[in-house]
Image (tube, rainbow, N blue to C red; front, side):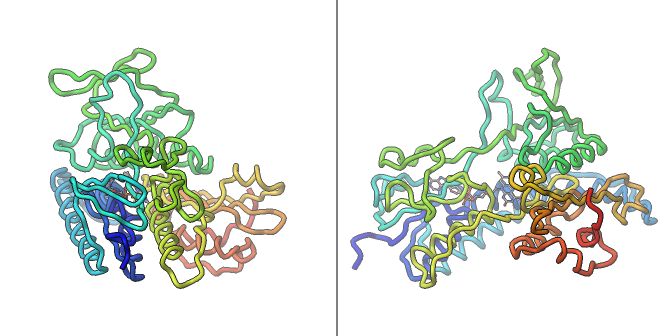
Length: 451
Ligand code: FAD
């Protein structure tokens, strides 16, 4: 008999927590998971899933316009925000139920409430204590809003999914992928949309050509992009509208201001520092390659360790940890290379591997292939939107180091290229691959002339 109530006590039933607790229980461990808010965590409730549903919703405005060139008349198309918002919520509630069943069926005990670590082997939830041989801390991250006068009037992405009324005019502040995605969503759904970013160009860390292409496409769609732009203060007026005072003292009125200015590890009120868990930059829990913190019985993964804040990364980290702790196979270290990602901007971005800038820093001889073209669909729709593709190749070994795309379904297309890059594909292999015709994706295997 174990001296503890559980082998593993997991704090947070989000992407990483659900996967780790389910897999650990399936491997024979006695597992409990505490969840304070919603099953499935950020991704299911206020992240990837509802966002993607909103992105689909937002794209209809262009689809209706594009249909004309194909002979369709779409008259009287109107958008109703409560319908989209509430249908989305129903779908999320359905997913919450699925997550509950997944945990139950795996034999994981679900404890509702916020958990706090009391000591290296004890957790407290709602006044009750539980002991465990190991504690896994997976509380995710939360939006960060800098301090400034009027901060209390802004919303963050969490709120955007549940807005009572849809804004006529919104200002999105931030230059990361969440800011870019919400600017596209609000614009597509009919709001006059401004995106304000303090730097020269948004999406720092992405390939420069990709960033510039998306900038041009978003401007072309009518999104008011403002770079080197800073909010000084925000005032709320008697009619509920907001007045922004910009850094140059000009003022502007709008209905909502959405701050998407980064996410920080959610480590508040967890009792971690008190028990000696070391924290790094921005409050992230410091862990070794096996996700073990400075307190040997306490582990952490997902957004709270602040490596790559993505759902598939949290899932893989969860699997790697469970394999390490309870698996019968040789543990495999988590591999953070060649992780393909998408930005569900309008149009989408898909990317895997090195940007041109990163490749040039690391390799002496870098060869670039680029293609910019009008998607076949838009020959009849009349839309001027361009699709952009780029390959970054090591001139010495011919290995493809990076693939980047801006255009419809870029995320879908890049997933397969992620496999190719992980397999170490060379440009010669890309060239010898027969394209699927007629698709946009075939361009990735037909680019022959270096840029
Ligand atoms: P989470 O999923 O956040 O789960 C943490 C859970 O812990 C939460 O349910 C929380 O309620 C609970 N919790 C916190 N503290 C306690 C406590 N003390 N006791 C009990 N429970 C607690 N990623 C992608 O890969 N693709 C996307 O398209 C994408 N889009 C996103 C869009 C938005 C708007 C946001 C905000 C995020 C998006 N992400 C996306 C990121 C993704 O959601 C996260 O990387 C992922 O959810 C991290 O998983 P996690 O398990 O670390 O944390």
